[in-house]
Picture 1: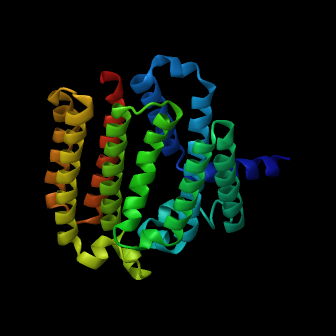
Picture 2: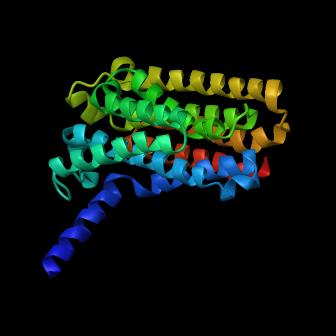
Length: 285
């Protein structure tokens, strides 16, 4: 009995790491914040919002599992200490949990609406396609993850129409910062990706040209956010100075000098902090 309990505990611990539990919590909180602060406090009592967050987290968890499933060999080079599949959980169980989470999260969306179910299904499919192929291609993999992150915010507007420009601006923010973070992660993982024939931007273009591309992306992203604000939202410029210009300016200064795996790892973490800062700014809006 004690041995069985230890096995269950070990499996639960492996799943906790494999599904990036705290990332899932951030996704859930981002949707709750978007609904409560950008739509209205009445959403707090809406059972559909809780289902939406649960299903979105299921899809994301399934995506993390299938990503690690396909990347075991690469991760053994880039981040051997983080490898779970083959150590804490077997490949067969990993596929089982991926399938169960993805299918449940997709079709259970029908409890809310067919639109939510369709978005969840397409998201689960894109996560599988990303892990199987897209992530090994230059930029298209980064963009697909960025789109999925933006959709995880925008889907709140699908649940609560009509068009909400505040949700749009945060969805664009999440999309852009995720794309930038994914490219930085490719720079961090260059060695393992190159060993197994991946064609990410740092491998195809080199680090220097990839950095230039990131500077251009950041500039275009900031201009797009300002344009959306000018056309639809009208927030005071101080919001963008505090939550966008200053963090992105610091990111650029660190990126200019970055040239080691540790440097890029720190920048990846900092980009995630910018995303969190954006979520936390919702109550101020």
